Amino acid sequence: MVSGVRLIPHRVDGRLLLDITQLIPLPEAEEFMIKLRRRDQAVRAAASGRDWTQYVITSPSGTTEPFRKRWAVLEMVKVLNEAGVPGSALAQALPNAKFLSVAGTPEGEELIEAYCDGYPMMRRNIGKWFLDHPIRDADRTWVLSKMWGRQTVPTLDKLVALAPREGFSYRAV
Image 1 (spheres, rainbow, N blue to C red):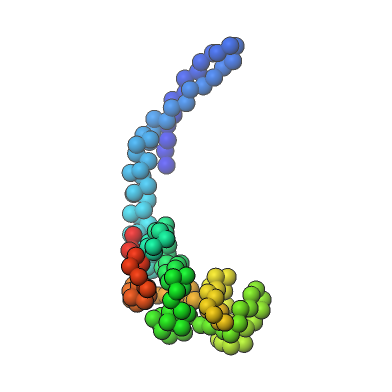
Image 2 (cartoon, rainbow, N blue to C red):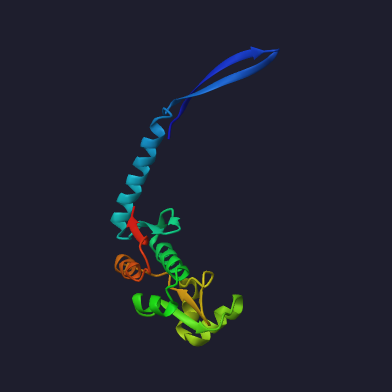
């Protein structure tokens, strides 16, 4: 991007000072330039066939910043669990094998080993799970998949339906 500035020298107490003023682009044009960049990104994303939609999650405790779909589903699962929705109910609302559990509350390497022992296919795909964000519920530890494809909106709808009270929602931004 091209920019232009005006430099005006001033002598103050024997020192030379510069007054620097941005001329091009105008400071007011910055917001316009940001919108153009976002539009270009959206066009590229649409052309690539990938879904880069972001979602804002709302719960009684507040509204989040926009999240990509995997983080949005994780956030909704977390706030629902914190509101009292058990892991087993969350697992029924989530698509098959997207929310898995092991007994106990293992942590760190012990958690990874417990999942790999319980779900051998996970060993090859360990990076596709939120093992660093486990959900603890009673005497079970649950982890959520990071892989959502086109299932995000139906999944968020099912999760919101589990909300124990008003105030849980999401919106695409």
